[in-house]
Each structure stands twice: as C-alpha cells, then as structure tokens.
Length: 127
Image (cartoon, rainbow, N blue to C red):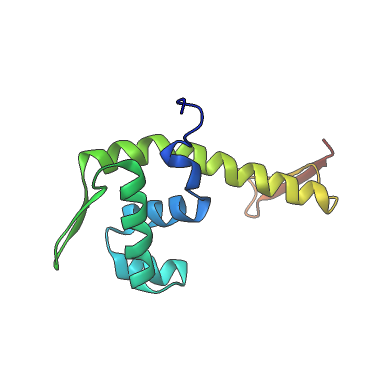
C-alpha cells in the first residue's frame, strides 16, 4: 500500500468538529461552549476527543476546575482559525450568490462642528 492509498488523519474531520474546537478554545469551558453551540456537553467532549485522536495529541488540559489550551492546541488554533473563517465566508458567499444577493452596502456617518445632527450618506454598489 502506498502513502497515497491511506487517507490522511484530517480527511475525516468536518467543519463542525473544527467549529466545536474553536468555540471551546474561545470559552475555555466545555459547558459554555456546549450552550453556545446548542449541543450537549458530552457531545462537545466526544468531538474534542475525536479531534485529539486525529491530531495525535491533546488539544486541551482539562481538570474539574479549569480548561486551557496545550501548546499543540494553541498551534492548531492559530493555524486552523483563518481556514475555518475562509471556508465559512466561501459558503456564505455561495449561498448569497445562489439566492441572487450580490454587491455591498456602505453607510458612513460624519458630524460637523456647526451641526448637531450627523450627516448620513449611503451608497450601494453592484459587484
């Protein structure tokens, strides 16, 4: 069997698992992460354990009183977050294109020393 016949460890990782990891890393609390994600705390633990198995190391040091990122977890968070955000943006962009949403809306507010009410300018541009 060649190296190309065996799928890499990350091949079975899905976006949801990465999102759970990022949320736990932000909250540093499995219960609060579970609330934010609207899933059971035990499911959060299960997903993190699976991800740790795929990475090949512990992502979090956890005790009954504290959760913190390990050096492996810090490195993984630093590397995976921009890709996760880019994938979300790509899906959002595709969804918007699918329903016909395109372009941008910019709103600017400025005040003048002589005026008490701000001047509001709006503009839309189709891309």
